[in-house]
Amino acid sequence: MKKIKHLTSLFISLILGLTFFVRPVSAISPQVSISEPGEYVNYNLFKLSYSALTDDPGVITAQFYFRKESGSYAAFGPVLSGASGQVSVGSDQVNDQTKYFFKVEINGGAASDETSVIYDPGAPGLVQNYWKEKVAPGHYRLHWKNPSDSDSERVFIYRSDETSFEADGIHKVGEVGGTPNVEMTWENSTPDSTKEYYYALRVVDKAGNASGLVTDAPGTVTSSSVLGTSTTSPSTGTSKVTQLPKEEVLAEVTEITPTVTPAPTKFVKAVNEVTEALENGDGKGGLVIAIIGIFLLLASGSYYLYVKRNK
Image: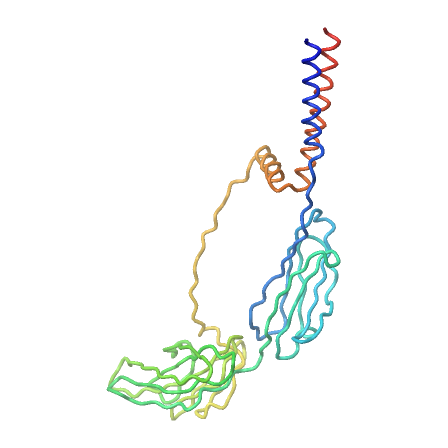
């Protein structure tokens, strides 16, 4: 009777061991992602990066490609190795005012990802049909039509009680939408109703380029230093500014407090890795299960021999 119990125990152990041992091992599907440069840029020197995931991060290779809109892809930069890396983009790749596509492939095309950007270094057009009316003491109404540029985004408005002034952050009093070809009306109350005020308008596009100034001031309205370049906008508003003055950007900055997670102990980390492997059914989990199965087979066999010798 004892012998039958021992044989039954051995049989059950063998079945359990084989069940774990022959469990299928699933491989991680190769994945890669490419960084996003933004929808528009007005510069052609920047970097692109990638992050990849495979069964073996030690044998990942990556190649970047680029093309103009309606063109075909061409490789650029060196073949990179590892789970992440970056490549420099320059004038050899981006040199015309058009849309560009960038792609990264890993391990000879096992996985790929793509992004795009519009290179726009040119200034937008001026506002059209500008005129000003004084509707009440200390209250003005401005009228204009936005330019037809498809990437026109905003109109900056400057004000001064001086006939000549600088269109800078100190004199900026408004910012409104720059939807192309739209007739605009904007009202403004001034701080001193006894003074005469003058205005100047500038268009900004999605790439951050700025137009020349259109003004009603009888004197000269100038632009402040723009990324190291001093520009002048006469009252006719014919000059161009090809970069956006940094001091005039309106943006909300949200501070995010990082969350610090304590590092797990080696034991907890190991348990978590095995649990995650078992849940995902990846190769690591299959290997652990196979080892457990072999251990059960050996343990059950040893136990059977021990019992048999000591009957």
